[in-house]
Figure: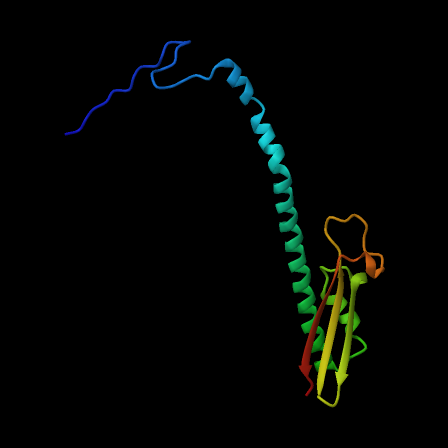
Length: 152
């Protein structure tokens, strides 16, 4: 019914068990360093994936903060009727973004009874060493978020 098998005893030193082959010495030497070569070939791919993950996450975080600041700025203008103070208000809200690279403008259209707040952010990569110095050509991407709300 059940077949019983016994495990063969270990082979004496210098001899291989039946069924297992040893590599000849020349072939064994050819295998040395192969793992290092595989790591060296895969390292650029892994570095590129890491760059995309970090940069993509930072980009999403910055755009999300910009969108929230735009919405809050529009609410501020609607509630307080403070078109001139929207720049300082938005800068105080977007604490995770560089305030020097952030601009906010509010336009109040009395004919349509709408307020539109546009916030722009000169995004810079996390892998660049020099900070944003006000030159728009230094920015990698300029994000823009706009929110319109009706006035009461």
